[in-house]
Image 1 (cartoon, helix red, strand yellow):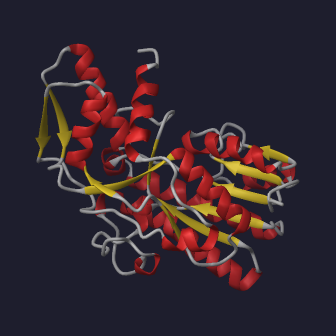
Image 2: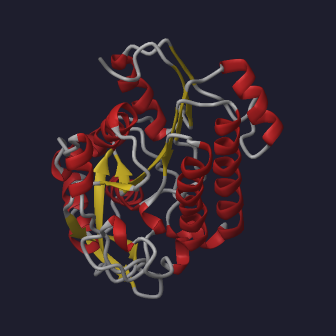
Image 3: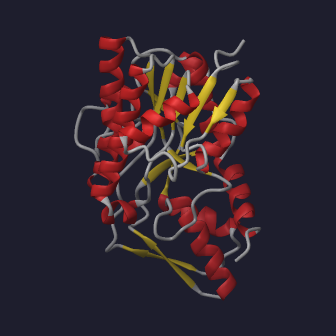
Length: 312
């Protein structure tokens, strides 16, 4: 029987890209109820709003997915906001969790917490061996503090708090806003827009030499729920596919899926971000049997198809 069955579960960020998929998959575990606090009613940066949320929903388990996120450009413009909002939400939620004797708190962190020059593949034991890549360090460090808090609260208060570190997510329903999107939706939008406009070239940030690893949102949700169901240790756990691809190869692959026949021009004046990202996923496999099911090509194909079907 699932440990989530019959439980009152709050999913912060449950109306977002990842959260919607988590809530949909969570229904298969037969919880008593799933509640999704909306920011208009429960500002998770406000301790009083969090106290009201706990009073209203009386959760036994909290899956903390809520985050203020964006790509490299958005991180450069909003470092203060990304640090404050993410830190305050997580710190106060976990404090309320221990005050209400919550059965389990699942903190979904970020790959951005790793040091800039982490040996590849990224192993969880290397998390503290340096400072994160500068363009997203405020966001990465804010999320990293939740790992510290989770381990400290487990030690002092016995709170069963676990921390997951997912790699870059993508999939149907992603954020395609050019001001805040991550690399895959940003590239899809650029290539589809260029093809429809009959443009002969598309400009892409950086040199294309940096590598990234990507995790389909369906796989990410499944990994989070596997951990919520059966992982109960203080050590952080990577969630990823274990496969990296250069941004240059990614862009060329996406351009083909988008049927864009023009030239890709690389803007070397823009940052590449972290040089490489690829996770060691052995811990997730050993601790709760997580392995990906959606290949990158399959995921890109369906994500492009989803975007093409959206009204312009």
